[in-house]
Image (cartoon, rainbow, N blue to C red; front, side, top):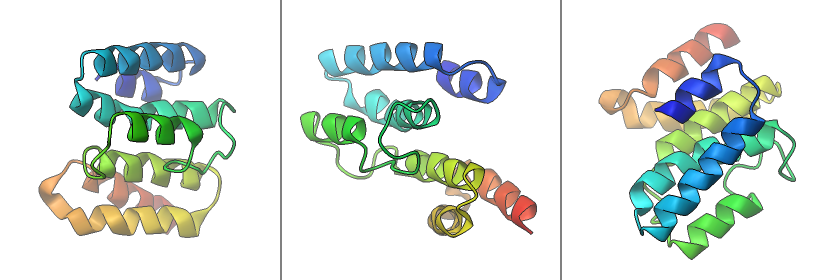
Length: 128
């Protein structure tokens, strides 16, 4: 909750990068992989937006994400909608509307079961 609130606050992202990395490593050391995987998309997004990754649009393929996914054996499900949501937002910021639309389509498929639908609706309104 802290990370997401901080991300949308407009404050500088480097302190968030440090805090979330510490959290991810701590959760990994306790073998609490669920909270770790739920926060990994935020970490990767902050890395991408602060120029600390190879590709600003590379969410799943970034070295950091791959490291955590492989080390802690991500099941490909936990946090997936969060990946799509942040991916959609970054693509929209970068004016990559087709990529953002693909993420939005994925989020629409999961439907009203999640709170992510409101972000898709906002994206569609702004895009129009």
